[in-house]
Amino acid sequence: MLNEVYLIFHFQNVLDGDLCEQFNSIDVAKQKSIADDLDRTPSEVSKKLEDIRTRYAF
Image 1 (cartoon, rainbow, N blue to C red):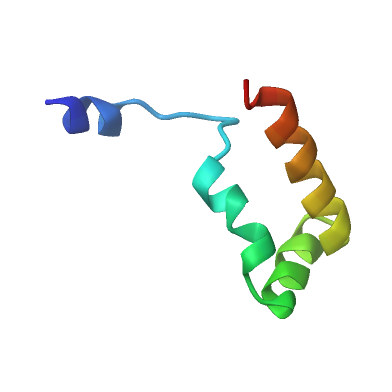
Image 2 (image 1 turned 180 degrees about the horizontal axis):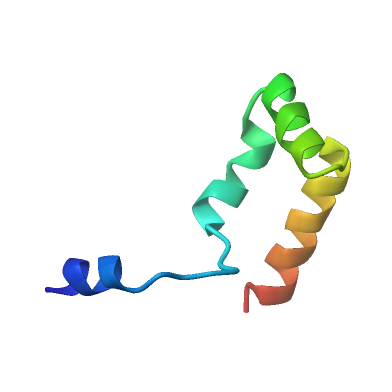
């Protein structure tokens, strides 16, 4: 039942924490591709993710 309810509701402006945690682990070319899509550098994306992690972790 719980999985069915999850599929019914559509969420917006939600970060996938597990996906964000993987950013620094992926290869540099993929980081650059993601950062380019966001009009940022990989270091800017990494810094922003770190800021979000420390701000909302507790």
